[in-house]
Image 1 (cartoon, one colour):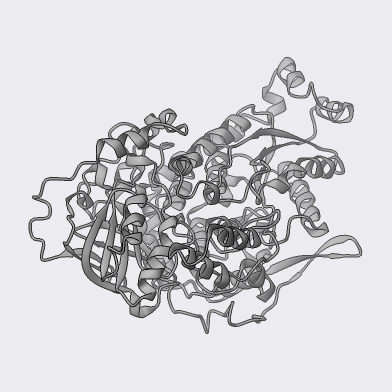
Image 2 (tube, rainbow, N blue to C red; image 1 turned 90 degrees about the vertical axis):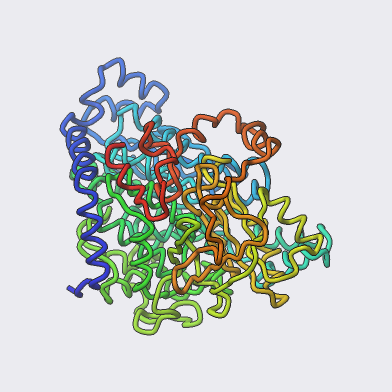
Length: 630
């Protein structure tokens, strides 16, 4: 077995030590749930009859025998999200597949699935991050009927997979497998899409031209093909051992995709019958580290600096941004996928895909090979790829050499000797920055601040020509307590235009920038947030700010009285706007209870006085210290 890289070993050991109490408590609860027996043994005859009252006669007879597994399906289907539209037909594929092996399957429940691509720059975006915890709760509601021996989760996109993951871990005594839908075929080149967006931001093309470009990009069922949060989710589910191998990037409406969905269902039945593959055993400290490394090695989404913390906590595993930063410092960058390159995920898959990444990372000692997965012991099954031969699903070894080294490289010859995520900190707090798409000459910016409360105000200043200079754009009151921490990707084209004009430009915010964080340096998720007393509330227009991604620095320059200044307060109009309309009034309790960004921005593990967003009194405070008792 390849020796584990010493930094990976060190970080893993620290996570294990930090998580002793919470992990032990989680496993104790899962063991107790397992010993209480299968669903059909716990439910009364009336309960069981209710559960199958609407089932076909064959399934009803099978269920009443009391000897065969029942698989619960939790689905994120809706047909306005291209990535989730294919799930409409997946439940029937699953039912038919498990009947072949004398078992049953039922849709246990559905979860909401909203799209940041639709709500980007709109009021509904304020509910985006909170939807993750709603999905986790909805997953729990679906599975709490306690009538299932295994579960299959159908989800792909941004908050949906993290939410399904968190909710399913509450039922970690069961085997749980995730089944994705796959990406849409490639549309227009990503560089062309970016060009049209930049020209529209400058008023050089009209809205019709922009719409034509966007429709050519997002044009069919399947995941968006850039490497944002949705496709980062799929990479992590594979390296976390919750997918069948190499299922992430197979197109939706193909025979191979249907065969993989059926195989996923049958594998869930096999695990239920064997008593193996509990989600509680699959998701461990080691598999969480593998997920982080997979994200870093491929230049994945910055959103997972938040999601992964909450996801791991659901299994009793405590991680923080320092862990991610240290892993990133040694993880080789193996992939260039848009926005970190010009290729999309289809080209990545064709060049070698997830199987190549898994083989390289394991072979070089960057991930733990001795993990439990839904395929059994060890990571080696994830070096394989599926294919159809004479109508049958078979598995073959993936390529051992990249088929396109402009997209995918071996660990011995990476694009960069470190991953794409870094921690920056200083008198403005702690934040993360994705540098895999930022050129080295743009990673250090020292310039006067231009401070805003809303994206609209910042964009208007851009349109008015007020930002045509070296500038650090500070957008505050965008954290989880303020307004649900929306993505601020609508600013990306404007930031790119300023940088292309030759100005030194950076972006600093306590909000999110999205999985499509691009070529402009952006210190995001600043924690503690401005509304919770964070230092961003003390910054004024003209203050000199230094963002040095190379040195890990986010600080003011020659502002000795920063903390002594009166904190800015949100305008009443903006505060009320964040609290009302578009359903936001229903989420007031979430804004009051939510934890800090570095603690996962979750309410699922929050309790008054522990994760309420106030406890990060200093930039170097560890939010996980207060999670142990949560």
